[in-house]
Length: 145
Image 1 (cartoon, one colour):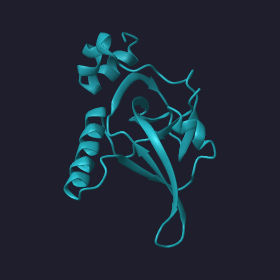
Image 2 (cartoon, helix red, strand yellow; image 1 turned 60 degrees about the vertical axis):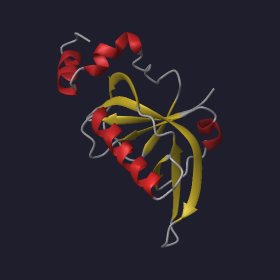
Image 3 (cartoon, helix red, strand yellow; image 1 turned 90 degrees about the vertical axis):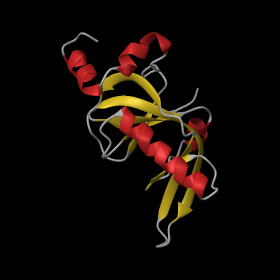
């Protein structure tokens, strides 16, 4: 069973912002003729990387709720120019909206088990995914979603 990671999308206001950010990075990679993968660099390397790469995703927390995910395809430890150990999380550049779930802020990343992960917003929930996020948040807070 794959293991997931969960991380805050700092500076991101919505799933739409995250998608635009990833699209911008893909356009820059294409211009430089680099592989079209979304790369996020972290300070620490997950010790359970084999379980994560075996089908896991990075779940993004946006404005206090788990809102989207990207499939992780590789985890690459490396040293930066100052000799400090870092890690590249290599992901498919496709942001998938998930059923929103509240999540408090935390530092770094955390492991996220499949049974704790929210389901993707599929075609049945397309109307929810299409809603402006502030409206969706308010409806969720009122218990209507």
